[in-house]
Image (cartoon, rainbow, N blue to C red; front, side, top):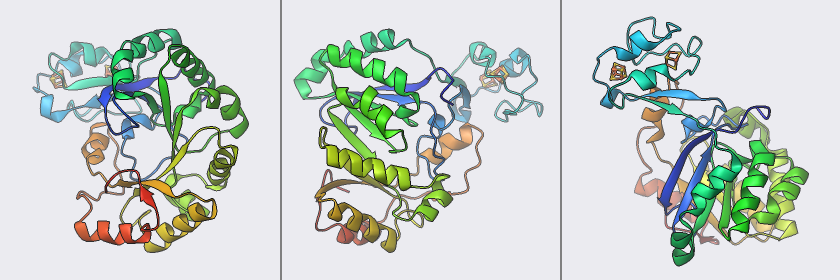
Length: 301
Ligand code: SF4
Ligand code: SF4
């Protein structure tokens, strides 16, 4: 994955949930984890992908005619054979509506820094800045380091949302010196559960978290996604609370489950196993909050 060019899935301006003030969030494509509930499925793969939106499709068939690789052999524009698709983008160009979208664009770091810094006055007035997200932005540590340095030279406040699965020394050398804040996701205390639901063990993640807390050079906010029947078991949440307490952490963010990722995942041709379609109930929220009542929450659940 590291040999690829970093692609950006989206630039979300006026973001209010990804750190203080008004921010622009940069969504990197590519992630070393494969969480079964991934709420940004368009950011899991590092390569470009075609997203089909049935609500915007006019059924005109232009995409079928434009495809040089026969990647929709059934004749249904919504059923792309991802093994045949070369992500050439010809179907996107041919589409007269917004039925298809190419996810993944490369920007040279200087160009992206210039683009992002255009909102500097809004960032300054609101106490905001830029947040690196994904996917996992640290997959591309050299590029991320260059981008962070260029933005810091322009005076932009920088936050990163990370899975914590990175090479600590390289992260500390390339990126950490330019960051103002770290949102660090913790999913499971138990490594075998972490492997089962994310595809990777958690030892390196927990060690990286400890390392950043010990270094204390940048504020680190732990964030726990509340995924019913996955991360949000009483035992797992209690174990995570204990892990944080032992490190002297008193503040955290709880991320409520958001089912809106499911249609996005389907539109990318994925077939997710985890499919809870409803939001957290008031009772679930009460139960989770009770486990963390000794902590200060970054925002309401
Ligand atoms: S991106 Fe290219 S190969 Fe893939 S479906 Fe579209 S036209 Fe066909
Ligand atoms: S070209 Fe666009 S609007 Fe026409 S069938 Fe394909 S996706 Fe739908």
